[in-house]
Length: 240
Image 1 (cartoon, rainbow, N blue to C red):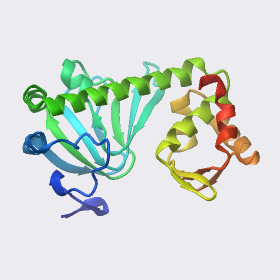
Image 2 (image 1 turned 120 degrees about the horizontal axis):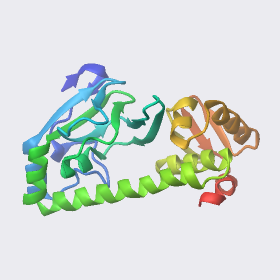
Image 3 (image 1 turned 45 degrees about the horizontal axis):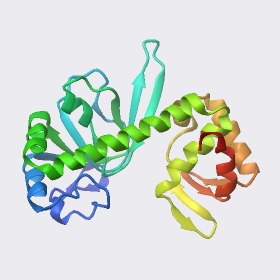
Image 4 (image 1 turned 30 degrees about the vertical axis):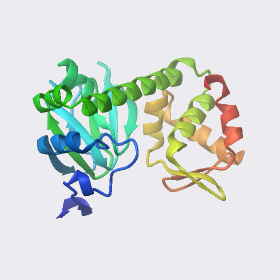
């Protein structure tokens, strides 16, 4: 079904072409049917806010298509991008399970398709469907690993080069290997990268320029190509 933002809305998970390995919706028959019975599929335009830091949890959001950034804000108004969410991830699970407020704000970076499940329905799914509970535990474990990576960015890296190199290497994990190197879509401004790795925008720009001058990376608009992966890993060696 055609919907706004130039997207095709796909509501049937069983025949959805968007599903991939590791997606939360990769559930066995009965669990997938139960999941479909309680989800609401919708689309969001870029810059739309799904939920806000400090808000009581309404439920969980499974990202089917598009990308979402998670941010935290200090009392002084400083913003930190916690991470960028990719399709297949479920957002708001910890708050929905614990009953505490959402820890972050979730904002669409581009048009997104999202499946929403109300908190009470999600908790019942966890209780009634072991496969859903296992998938939720996997998501929470992945979130913990990513939180550890964030600590490395902010606390263990000794230089801007290490921070940016580690960020690029992690962002490229789902990239495509080409004759020129590993190619991936970044789609973040230098300001947004600075909010992820904890350095100034100017330092990000200077570091990226340095990496390009050393032929470690090449950029074409929002596309990045890692031309010398071993050299970039050497830059990130202190946090490897």
